[in-house]
Image (cartoon, rainbow, N blue to C red; front, side):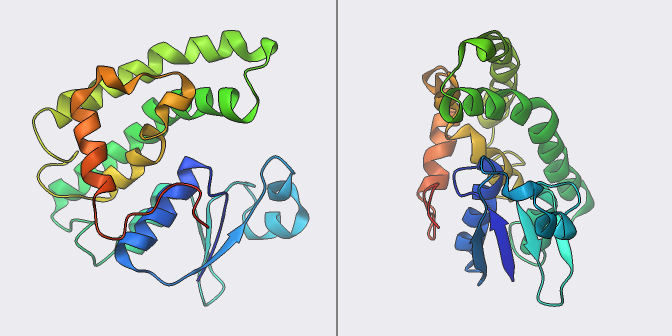
Length: 200
């Protein structure tokens, strides 16, 4: 399998982390978003949406969207429940990640880290803070009652949300305000097979 991505991207890192935790053999192909690699014709043939991460299977088929890739790769493992309610809860958190978490925390991080917080984006950066803290508060509430997002066991829901949460401070979000999230981050970073972001 080939995985196209940028190891500094939370959406790509969560795929790398899952592969490391489950010892999934793959070839990592670095893609530079800022250099326009995802807009080139050869990449658009693979994913017309022009986004990473992208999974290329050995038979030439492709899977895009980070959480779809996570669940595909985790199928049959202990990280993806098969019981309908638990599976729905995993997907619930993954939709939450894409619609209520990533648009605030990941975008604020991108503006600050990748763009250097330019003057013309400062208002947008500040506007992302309230939504990001709301998402973190929802996670804090859940993680105050269970060690992982869907209960007692690690799932792909946790991998999905770990990607950008563990670097949320790079977007201006002080995680000291969220002790249960802090404990959850430590549980995940202590897992056998854990790798840091930026590991190619």
